[in-house]
Length: 186
Figure (cartoon, rainbow, N blue to C red):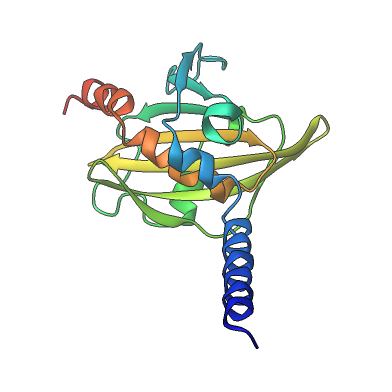
């Protein structure tokens, strides 16, 4: 085989390998990792209940990879100060799925998270109902002593796991952390 032909074949193999690697990049995360997500505060859309109103934010698909609607509020004195949000049943008890127009079905068990030094849990759900199609939600609860902070994020399409880094980045960001400090008096 001629040396020039041998080099051409090797370069062709390298090019094919690089194309395959590019095609295997995770869908949905690339956009969120490369750009800053833009969250806009919106009006709290739910009726008043014993926990009061919270804050509501939206991130458009062009900014986050999927359209996300995040609702967060404090539940003062509603969490165990010794165990915090320790398991799936505690997360379920704290979550705000009463707002959803449909049945929430867990897609997997929850896992631990850390938001600005506060421990908590996150779990993904599919929401089914007569007017909903491919709606997913993420429930997040974290605590400071006996005060819980509960966030519910809804989205169309999926999978919700791909949006987890975007959600956690926002919850750890300045906007939410200023609100948490004011709300809990930290």
